[in-house]
Length: 148
Image (tube, rainbow, N blue to C red):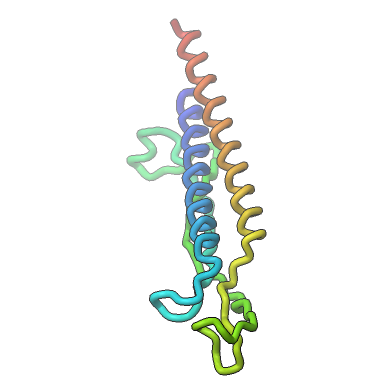
């Protein structure tokens, strides 16, 4: 039983780490929503987190042997942070220092409303994982209490 409780805690902590990474990327996107110049040249390109599922280790012994859980549990991790290939937003502002000959300025492909929705979703997912972690902890403590 203890192994299953540790497994649920591991799954919750992996979910929290993944959602924290997602919130970090969203924060970076919002912070650079008006950046028309980067070190690489050109406007900032929106980043996005790509998740992947990973099998859960069932107990400490199987961690060292590299065996997956018998229950087939899955957890999540960040596979990569990729750049959004969508086109840059263009605005007409001939007074902008980065305007081309026609007065058009390439702006980042960041939609702050979409980013705020993504941030809210990540925060809710993080909270759900915290709740699950707390429930697992309470069950583990109750099991220890029953053994006394």
